[in-house]
Image 1 (cartoon, rainbow, N blue to C red):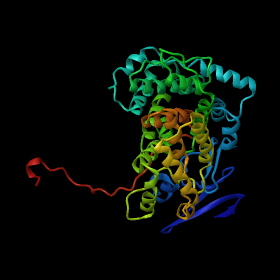
Image 2: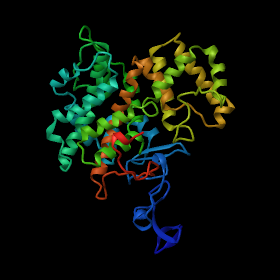
Image 3: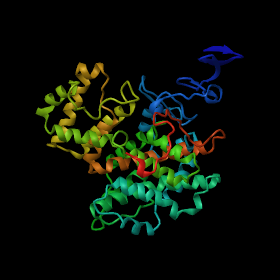
Length: 434
């Protein structure tokens, strides 16, 4: 890498060919080498399974420094947003790039609150699913189906339609998530109320029943709001990349978000908090923890502690610190005692923060560990955990999709491959095949 006409460049030699490539700097974080002309000039591609060393886009939305444990939304530390802001303010920030003024916030809240209802025919759409269908399966189908109900906001070339679709997705996702939950437990749908904030409205739609009045617990509402904030965006992860890839073809935003939900469903991504809770269930009681910790340290044992460590964060996940505090607030508010699962979780947390093995390997409890415990305490079944993740991440997906659509350098996604199959061969009639 050297200086050239005040711009950085990198040189790559492939046999007798030499390629000079531009180095681009971000405002913070690693620089990137622009390899856009690599194939044209060398006839070769790069090989990067999982794209872990490849920047697929330029973005101004979210920044992560995994080594230092930093997460910024539009430059603002996640700790400050979660402590002082609310979810809809976070949505505004991710969508528009700046924190709203009081007037802008009031207008945005109003617009979202007036789009919370879904088309009445959507109710009959739900009846097509089996009663025991996984709520994520219901979400993939129902969100994708929104494009069949809202034709007036699917023209991605129209900025006004893009914004209407964005508001609709943020507003209707909590309603659809609550409907998926109600359908799974055989209870009637509860309509949204415009006088409640988003998180309170969502809790009411999930847990209210027509037979009695539901009173929102402010501690639980604030915890729910904080969970949504912490999951709102996380840079170019698998589901966000899926949304961008689907959007690069010109697909409508509802279809793109449905694709993101499908990707999020995977246990290695959105299902991690569910996996953490299943692990706690497997351990079962506090007296069995030493046995499982010993197994976790054994390289030859397939057992792994779920909810510890993170692929990106090599330091303590900044979201986990906030989630830890929120988790304890919820448990204190609900006065939960004699819950073996929560006892196991709290004891495992103590060990992980003190045990040299965990500390040296930086296997700190992550956000999935704490959010799983918190959501269980609030009354959500494990099948709903990933649905709540999708609800929160919708704004991040929409912001990333919108940024991609408005990028003049945007191209349809087309990853390359290293082909290792059969070389050319001729077709044989079935009578000559052996």
